[in-house]
Length: 457
Image (cartoon, rainbow, N blue to C red; front, side, top):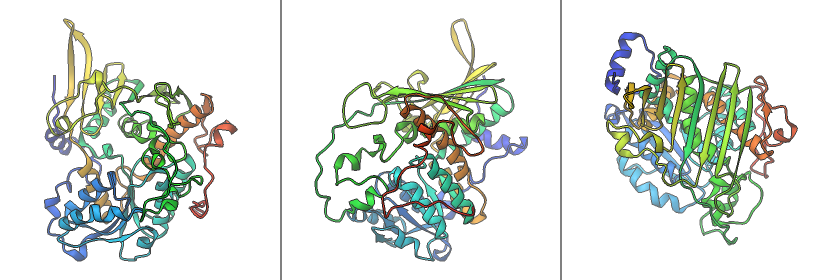
């Protein structure tokens, strides 16, 4: 059994001609840029300060070569909650606060934005930032619908912007090694890839409508979605409501689906079929808690994505695995990928889970042919974005890459929402052959929060 650790992989790649994506490790250590003069620092704005937004601001601010000059959030209370800690990381320099992020986009001194809003705001914020001449780091899920992803790509190209999608597995050296392993034919011919997204996310009841809290701009939070009074269920459970998101297949499953695309190299499918339902508990959620999507490709490849949200015994990869030389317990790893070649099966864990290749058992015991431990790739991905802001190269998770991954998941949603109809994809237009499904390709936008077609891209 050979054992590729992270350091060995990086050392060997220099001699073997293996190309690593730019910035995968070089800038991950913030101490390397701690002394960056203030005038040379990249000026950032975060749009959406809570949750993932708070994690990203701490990550970028800790580097030393970035400085947050704006915090934008529809909840004015978010500024007091998060600004002090960021100011401490920035030598006492406190960001300005705006409720409407467009005011930050008007500042010519702003270089880039970090978007960590609910999904339905990702596309408008990205397109408007590109039009304002700002680069973008945008979280997944990339967009509410397939058409929005197309507009994001067009805006990035038309305005020559660097747009990185927050699918950080693309900056993980262990995933790069897995990709090279497949490309070198060490797993043999791959005809089947299985992607899993399994956990517990219980259903929820619909709360009564009421007045929005003081200092909270509900109209802007609701944005392009249909009109609705303030409701705490909508605000806190948007991940599982069609009006705001595409369900957990895109909310969490997007990570490992995009990771599988990176490692194996498949692109837009030829046909898509998806079935499932909300079976386990009743409540307000209208996205499925059980879902199987099947994608077929012209390259003799079938990919499936399986989702369950009522399975607490399935375990997401924890910090001890991410930060140590450990592997998950694969049968109960909630976020794994299984890649079946004719010479072995590779099992991959997202976000630092590493990978192992198993071949035929010997004396009823498992045989691991090759393996590599992982590390959590957040810092690597942020480093890649910063490097590309300076070099103007495309980042590891360029917007076109992110769009094609999420586009495929939107096809699955379109199939599911039309009763499990099989959809045939036109790779040129990215449309499908079903008018009922195409009605879900784009949403109606509530004024004034309308995303317009990007012309001339």
